[in-house]
Image (cartoon, rainbow, N blue to C red):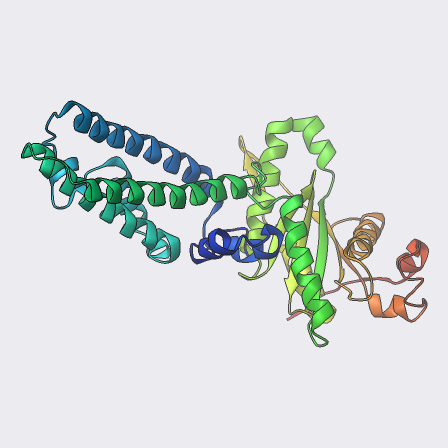
Length: 355
């Protein structure tokens, strides 16, 4: 999955079944871009505040018996005139949102305005407000508020899953995706998955020479290139500092190695422009399988050892470690022990065949 995010349909699962986020996050990171998460929570908050003010005006009018004649209270399409309604109309310009909980929220919002109009018309005609109509109005308001709060809390929670500099998911988030892939590896005999670690070469020198602003520019450039270079259901995350972690579902090591090395070459061929200067960015890569016979930490360690073998062999190269080759030298019980030296001996450089 490219760094991006939230399938609205999954909000129903989140709200109705309280599914643990670490198992659903892979689906949640499918549809919205990082920028959308940056604004979604604020949009919902401001819209709710506006709707609260709308509600207070109605309740005050009912107590003081003062008529309300504005369109947002009495028009047949009043749900389109309030701030919340305008916000819904705006997000529905994107077909992505016309599903799941967003459609339910729209339906409840329309019902709320219809119920409010019924009560306000009775007020404006100086009639006694029907108790059942008023109770229905209050109930719909509460149900709408509860639904929107689920969405609000969900957006706030998932907003924290991203690294602000690279706009990729962060280390905590990618752990949930790794857990999901590892679960598939455990359950399905023929399921394969590879991971890769990448580290920008000489990044400290860039910070020392050009400053941290340029360092952040290089991080953002690298992250964007990585994200643009993978399939939609692949993942790339900022794992820490100048280090990135890739996840390649349904990909063997023989397939993943060349894919990773093409990404490496693409990065090396795409310099960053800064104040008239062209700055070349390179990275070293280590790739391996996500093994079912070890824990996730051991697979990451294997990728990390391959990465540092790439550093030791001159940087800007891709090295791989085949977990099956290591299995041939270790029992399953011993595999999680310290096999660093054996892993180093099993590192092989990935070399692309020329077209």
